[in-house]
Image (cartoon, rainbow, N blue to C red; front, top):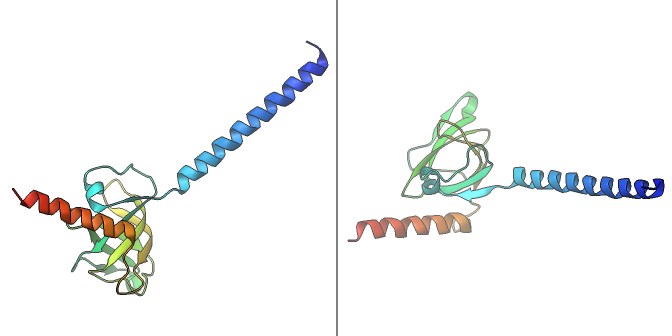
Length: 151
């Protein structure tokens, strides 16, 4: 092969290799940043991949909120969709509108003990608001429960 051809071939190969590495890094970054939404029922059914960033949504179960630590910065509560419950642990300051019996969306990961370790808690912003994901999940849970009760 001539040296000019070798040089052109090396340039083309290095461009292709560089492009492949760039695409791989972009796909890896997207995969790490995606937060897939799951309901407590889906989590109880084992549909959640371990260690993946996810969002869970449901209602804060009445009587389940426990505050620990200095000024209540370690919080545990149960997120429910009426079919299943998931224990959620969070360290930090809760949104002002967070309370029992209200809709909640939490971002984080499931730990090996089955406790959802939340990094962020999102609460509703007024009396009528509930995220579309949470509303759809709760409606589906109610329909599923009604189908199980009816013969």
